[in-house]
Length: 170
Image 1 (cartoon, helix red, strand yellow):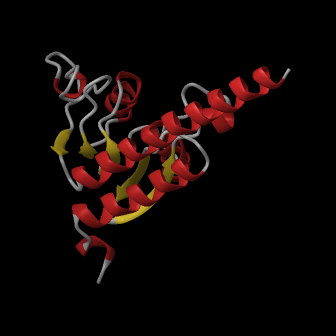
Image 2: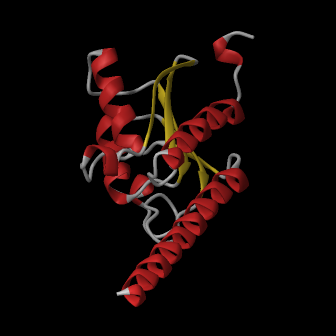
């Protein structure tokens, strides 16, 4: 199969693999891949905790890398695949980099800036409006986030119980 014959589901599965890498290192499991002319040119996952960088979202990281690889700031001809609906910062980066198409898996009702909370990518008056496709492998993307936060709550409870036991022993 030639690269140009891959489907949106194939590329989203690649983004999910990136999200799983984030999960494994304790980062919020969001993954992204950027495709140009049928080829993945950049893939990343969230790295805010690892890099101590509030802007180290998967989307921003793939945009930065693609800018370097293509030696241009305009990413026309590219499609961004991301497991969770982009936040306002990432939506702004998408607009500014002129990405043609955005495909995301699950909605983010607490911070999504594509359709859930804000409509940044289709806001009237902006000089660029990418095509949007939502819900590609959405259940799998959503479940990954749910599992992550469930594990995080469980871990915090275990830590609190252990700290409480240590105080009782004094």
